[in-house]
Length: 145
Image 1 (cartoon, rainbow, N blue to C red):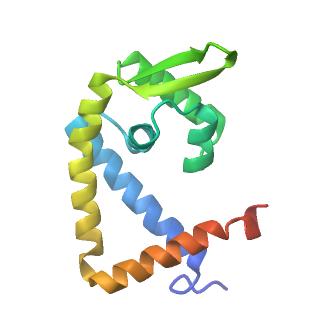
Image 2 (spheres, rainbow, N blue to C red; image 1 turned 120 degrees about the vertical axis):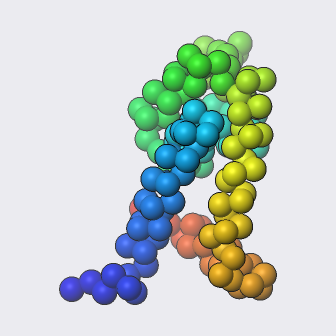
């Protein structure tokens, strides 16, 4: 049997699920966006103009949910989706002014949640954690490839 106190994939999943569920409730109530919308918006703030395929790759979501979420964000005036003039199959996605304003409001809360989550660690432990998570992320191909 699995020892859920030591099985890393379960630990990561449990943490992610609980963080996501809480974030959706909080962000929806305060800012009118769910956690999936927030993840996409935060990526668009970092990489304006990226295509949906890049969003799928970075976030790890399938194309269908990303496309549906982008359509909803566009409907609500939070993102603009423009066809690439050289390739109509490719679209450039950017935050609108309203989307940027929403992003800038949510990020304050997101960073505060992170600060509280990591408050049980000192600075050197946080750096070790980040390094370990990056290495695990880089090694995902060992189990997903």
